[in-house]
Length: 167
Image (tube, rainbow, N blue to C red; front, top):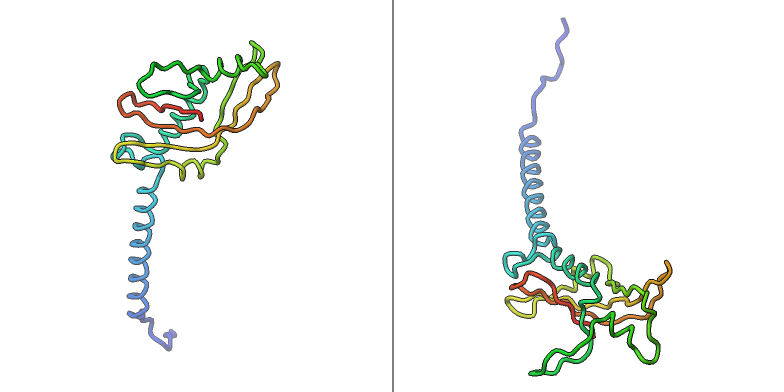
């Protein structure tokens, strides 16, 4: 029978190096995972501000789907709120009123990443988003864009809803 000329021996230093590299890889994976979880917009900020960034942006979009509830116009401090809804305001503009059958819409123009980056926390208990939005109307199946307007969306922790300010 023939025997191998060199005995099979495991190189201990290469085996130790492989174990060290494996442990370092696991440690790096753990650090990356922890950073991704901390900055995940689906869950971030919920404990601090009462709403996650993702839920807040979705609340803002839901409120924008109801232009008849968005108030426009100046609000004088100490005076009753006499502002009109966006729909009523656009349909009663003296220079170019919209047809009564027009369906007013407003939508955020930013990409998802710019919306997430635009969420701010002016103080310890509030969440705010300032972004441009497109205002327009639908009539007879066609969309007509009227222009852009700056929108401020504030989270109200008492009602757990977003409040829209159209400027």
